[in-house]
Image (cartoon, rainbow, N blue to C red; front, side, top):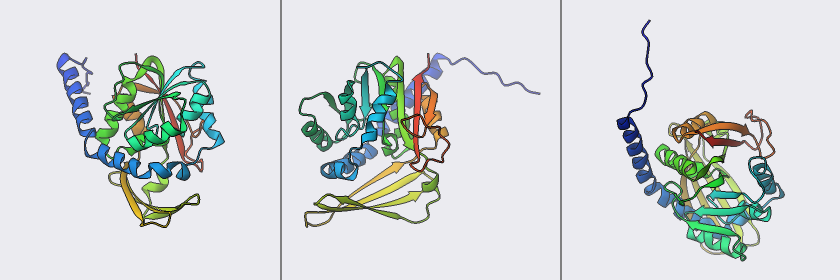
Amino acid sequence: MTETLLETPTATDTADTAEATEAAEAFAGGFGAAVTEAYSDALAEVYDDIYPSTPDLEDIGTYLLTLTEPGASVLELGVGTGRVAIPLADQGFEVHGVETSERMLARLAQKDPQGRITPVHGDLTTLDLGRTFDVVLAPFNVLCCAMAVDEQIAMMHALARNVAADGHVVVETFDPSDYHVQKRNELTTYPLGDRGTMIESVGVLPASQNMMLQNTLFLDGGVPRSATTVMRYLWPSELDLLAAIARLELVGRYSGWREQPFDGGDSRKMCVSVFRPLA
């Protein structure tokens, strides 16, 4: 029997890893980021109608208090209009929110006139705020907004780079089982209050795990407007691999913010994964 020896990484290996990370971040800041920003800009004025605030958003803060202390610092990636960040601020957290879309941040400013949330306009993949946070939070499938593996690797590095050594990274994705076997585009209609309607078409490319989203807005009796983006869904085991590349280890996985066991059977298909930095 032949033995395989695990070699200790050398300085050259470390340099190669650093170069690979730098290359991934350079790629991530390009076309994919521009598509995501344009899509977010297009939906900013109706985002809160599509995804209204709900009482269970407070469950996020309640769960975070099992990981950290009251008043702890939280960095949210993809803060949008503050759907998650505002309830966190209401619960006493010190919240910084990063967003690629200036129009989303403008809506956040309108909803947070006291300035309790510190907004950051920046790239989610190259983010480095020069400080660390008790919790780095990537909720509501923000990691899936990256359209390619390189972008997702870079985003995981950004999560790890901005979390305290004794802090936690919390990532919400979804169980992609149903989407992965989808054969035809699926249409969903969202009422937008008294302003109109949005129709969303979702097509899936299983080989690359990409979802193609086409949104058409019918607002105020005007000409229909379209917004298009590409997402990439992740299997939980794949997320763990990306986390390991960024030197994060899994410490918990749930199907909701009340720590429901994750078994893939929850109708909401939520997957809340909790990581901590490796020493």
